[in-house]
Length: 552
Image (cartoon, rainbow, N blue to C red; front, side):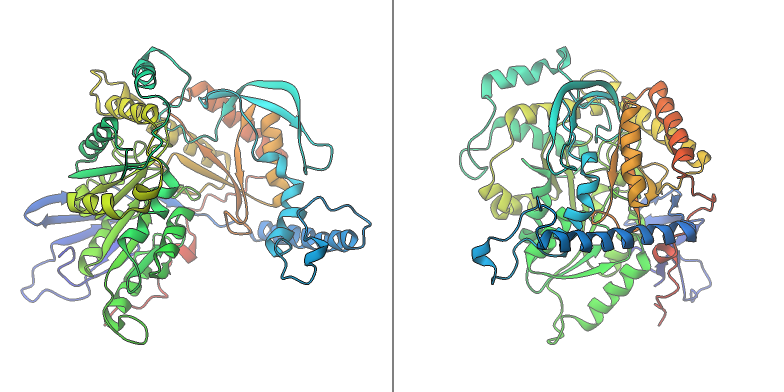
């Protein structure tokens, strides 16, 4: 057992509530959030990573003005809807046909209200078309709107050499063609661009088998299976693993692909607080004690869904404690490493390596090739019997087209680079450079006084903007300074937590980062975005776990 003393997991620490009968200490001990396990199954493990994460709260006046901004925007939205209904103002949004006036509205719901009255005001900050490779610098096609962002037209001008702080190009492998990509060109000449079949029919190539063997070797697991789309890797495989009579325990900040997969499965879904192991244990304990609703039968399976690095928060899963819980309550663990594989850990092997854990401790390892590998698609890895089962039952394997051969070769090339199988240390250098850039960028932002979320080792860096008006102003001003950023708001974030999300890359030079930081310092003063009071973390709803009573 991971916690033989019968202790509860709380705030990332294992607490033993019962004294040892012989006076000896429990095998598990913690200090300052570090979990050390003296022996597990005869093998020593040391979890020596101190989890340092920040979720600083905004000052009260900032939250007041943020909600006031949304309130005023809502009032004006209702006023404009009134004018549109009476024909005083033209409505450019999708509307119901007159023949269907007595039908239940198909478009005019509250979400559409938000889209047409708030999102349209700042729509120019999204979906900007680029016309180059998404490297550390890229080119953006200039566009303008003559009808308040309902439509756009291109001016014909290209904004050259914009610093790219938004793409998930963590290791800088998404780049324009050079001689190192010769093998991709060769594969394109031999295999063509597409497969035109599913994996179950005529769509399994030798390149797919080579890639799957390499992924399994990289992750140090028995087997792996690759898929053509990262989103579908989650949404189409979770339903193959669980169904009616099963229980899914999902982190409240999980990605939409995990949420969709859970809903499609038909299993019962319960949510636990983000990275809160005591909240998770309460759900696990209740599930074991009470079983299914009404019948009280035991759950067929209990599956815990988490991410390695959370893409909107920049936080890292508290994996050692979650593994301890899943062993204690005999649950299964499914981890999505879309933003951590290739980017986290000394050699880029994800959060299991980051915490010094055996990958076999995780039942289902999932990841995508769209971030660190400069490609597309995803994988499921783990025990051979798991992968063999998915080869037969996965909806993606049965119905979706196979991965394109040149894409498979790009991933093979990237994996060989990271693993050093190309005879160089360039891959390791990229992983190390990414870690240096991430720590430098995060540290400088904190020193400037910005509120940033997440773990100091996560390459996704959310900078809180809060107010909807400042979201648009921030993105527009940064583009004027030839810096491309991604801004995110509701419904992708909580209503009052709009933010800019920076993605640091190993390809960013120190000069590029300093240019961005200088611009951010100026924007922080101009828009008054430096809300931090330099109080480490404490987002009480995430980490204050005193509301959960677990002792017998």
